[in-house]
Amino acid sequence: MSSVVAKSYNKSADPVVAYCSEHTAIQTPLQVELQKETLTNAPMGGMVGAPEVLTFGQHFIQSFGGKRALDVGTFTGASALAWALAVPDDGEVYTFDIDHTNYKKYGVPILSKDQKTFAKIKPVEGAAVESLDKLIADGHSGTFDFAFIDADKTSYPAYYEKCVTLLRSGGVILVDNSLRGGKVADPKCREDPSNAAIHATNDIIFQDQRTRSALLNLGDGTHVAFKK
Ligand SMILES: C[S@@+](CC[C@H](N)C(=O)[O-])C[C@H]1O[C@@H](n2cnc3c(N)ncnc32)[C@H](O)[C@@H]1O
Image (cartoon, rainbow, N blue to C red; front, side, top):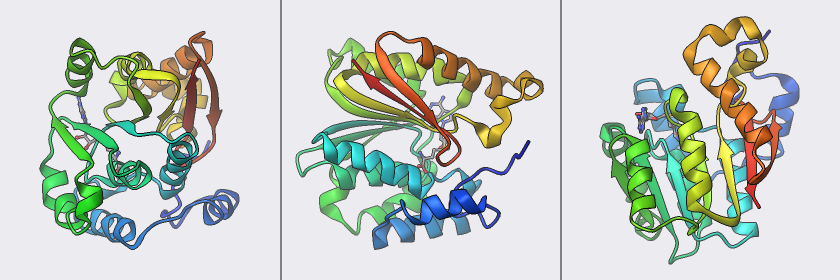
């Protein structure tokens, strides 16, 4: 069982995955700069979103004219930037992180070079479960077009549930790290709480009657759910 996380910027990526990524991922110069800065200087820089997953998400947003996006797990802002580039000028990207230190230190100096895109990004600092609950309490249920889940793995079931509530009918959720380098397919690896939580989330999504879904071997695994 391979434990290599198949992101296109990893030198050891599977050749078939690499081929698919080469024919999928599209990055603007600002995205390239942010990825390079993150991988070079940010602590645990390999957490940065895989370009092929970000491109895939952008295509959904642009295909259905999505305006409002949820980005659960900001880190240095790579996924928030991708969604901000995809939504129109009056679009909004709420990006959640328990701690925006990395975003401010590595992301903001690069993102702020493109003020039009940067202005669409709304950073929300704090535990994302609570931040999403606040959006629900404030009456935002059913108002978002797109969600990307990429934060602490043990909270994935809660993030999925809250994102389904916040999305409108026809909205799309992408759940990152849904394969965890293949580990979730190996029952022995599911003793790890993060792997167990991802496996549970995959089961929840597959059985959820409120969405249609597909688990794809894209990036580190991408579970796609379409809200009915
Ligand atoms: C994999 S990184 C996100 C990568 C980012 N989406 C990208 O594309 O580059 C995961 C992030 O989740 C954040 N995180 C961890 N626990 C969290 C929590 N309880 N609430 C919100 N964010 C959390 C971490 O601080 C980290 O920045």
